[in-house]
Image 1 (tube, one colour):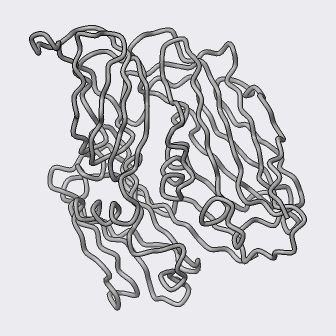
Image 2 (image 1 turned 90 degrees about the horizontal axis):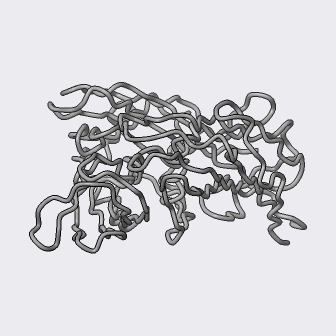
Length: 379
């Protein structure tokens, strides 16, 4: 047996600057994952790097049988999942300069990890499999950050789509992993929300996200509690810092590299929450790099002169190494281990299942707090 990485679209231009791109997938074979490479040219204004390609990909959906959802997530949620699944390319060069090439690599897994031989989508058992990309390369703001700009319309943004298909194999998959949003609410001070999960699915992972400027998990979340079967089991009630420590024990610190051209003193969307950004300024020898603490997915971009430590005005080419706990303010709930079926929850056997979010008194009012689930689907 072998994995065939089959290019079904190569350097294909998007149908416009915004809209819906539909990609027909093969109708046979065992689909392990879909590789998606996106390329675009940034706008002409210096110092507006807030909008990235993962913001432009507003929704990535894998649909079968006309309307059956297999995957439905946003670009930044997919990158966060790739970090948790250890399929993220840490050394990838990510840049957001003015009038320059920008690219991003996405991997949509149908299993628990890269090339999982137990969980794949058998394309011969479904009809009309397709990948749908909802995109907007014209947006200039994202999730509360406003120092962004539209991507260039010419050359048109483009993509490659490469399904990874297992060939010449007698393996019969046990099913596939479905990922989608199952609950959302708007953040508010001292709010207590029971995020009730739909009954029926077999859950192997849950993820909580609060991705909005200065309103990440550390700003909004005070306590988190998992309640199974109306209080029969309450595995944890934990604060946001202790929750991050659990994530760190399980996965270590996550790392994302970015190079940007940014204006001194402006806010910037840090892609990893609760950690540090290690900074280097590339085009001005009189600027000193500093370590900046990250707590609410937001940071102030400030440079100082080495000579007298006064603030330096202007635009700078900066390279950041972000290191911390919550990628794109998304936390994997530490109860689950996708590699150990004994930790999975068969919700059909329960009276109820919910995740209780208790917000801090000073929580923001702009964030949409989302709960995503991985469901094991037999095929």
